[in-house]
Amino acid sequence: MTVPTRQIRALHDDETVTVYQAYRPEIGDAAAGLGRFPDWYRRDRMTWIKPSFLWMMYRCGWATKEGQERVLAIRLRRAGFDAAVRQAVPSHHDRDVYPDQATWQRALKRSPVRVQWDPERDLHLRPLTYRAIQIGLSGTAVDGYVDDWTVAITDVTPLAREIHALVQSRNLPQATLLLPDEQPYELRI
Image (cartoon, rainbow, N blue to C red; front, top):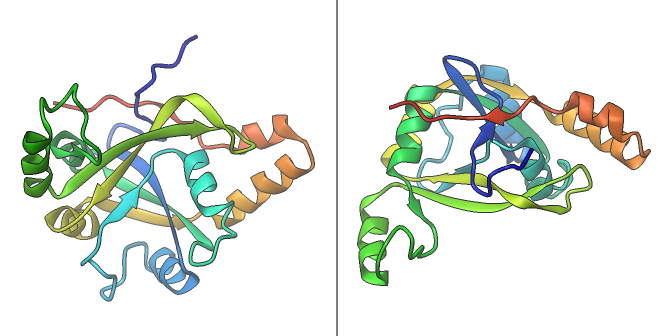
């Protein structure tokens, strides 16, 4: 089966979709302990969410990079996630979406959501031929993410470390069994 170049794939059910982020231990531990982001969570910068577990592992180096030692699985209400994706503007000018640079720049200024498609990763974190979506949230989108869309937050750092250890020991079948079951995700209208 051929995977489309740009297709959202995620762990999801009828009501929620799971995304991943990596944080410093003090933020990750507080959020996982509360099951939500703490009141002191900084909302004044863009925060990137990733439905792809393996892309998150690539980004955080299996939870070993400084400032990314805690990997969180954040379950979001589908309505919030879908609304964010619908209003997203590509982080780079895409001629298939915007006819010229000026039109894209105007859209970029109006939307609090960015989207970019980067190569999906395999268990060795090598790039694949198809892409994984990343969604950047700022302004009102961060407020929605923190206050309304988040249903639960779980620390999946132990899972990341377990899968990484299996990859290092070349036990790819067992590592694959532990991966989240990311399936094609359809936005609801």
